[in-house]
Amino acid sequence: MSKKQVQKRRMMSYFIEAATKIIDEEGIEAVTIRKVADIAGYNSATLYNYFENIDHLIFFACMKYMKDYALDLPNYIKNSRNSLDKYILIWECFCYHSFNNPKIYYRIFFDKFTHSIEDAVSEYYSIFPEELGEQSEDVLSMLLKHNIYDRCIAALNSCVNENLVRKDDIDEINEMTLLVYQGLLSRILNNQVEYTPQEATKKIVSYIQNIINFYSNDKNKRTT
Image (tube, rainbow, N blue to C red; front, side, top):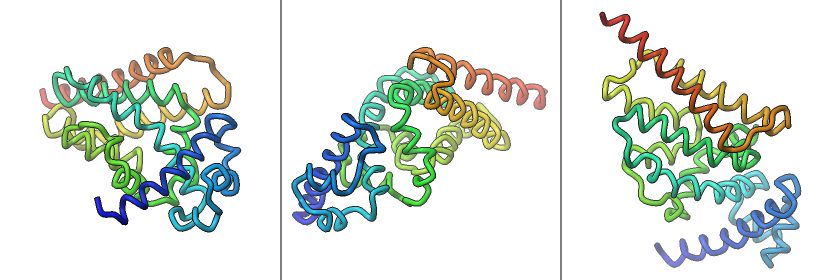
């Protein structure tokens, strides 16, 4: 890392840490440019040298909370038997961490501002690569994708390569899975249901398994 990159990383860290402090103490809604700059000890003009706007900063602050998920992921998938097993275990790990921090994960993957910040995930990890942990090539490729739809398709493509699901089915599998996951995440955020992270994770993983079983059975029927 060059001296300039080290300087950029250090300065961005000051502002990101200030934003996460506000999120922890007051919530995402309380994050403002002025508050972050005051806590970081710099003026607002300096902050704009490193972030496009408040949404860019909040997105990066939220990404800090993804570190535990990324570091935990190898523990979940280390004993997977094949790509399909790995796909379900990836979802299990993701669900557990996301249901422990639903506002953060919703902001990263579903908030309306998310789509206006292109390549923010890869940009973040280029500055803080250690937060990815030690990942296999296929999982690393998935984690660097910005869009949750693309992340899931990347995992499903590995299943296609092992002939565990049909390529023609993965878009439907993905869409149904994301509808189920986002639906429950939204209901939890809106206080429509009360589940512990473990209960919510178990429920989603069960639904994903049922979706996979349907398409696996359907594939077998069509090839007999």
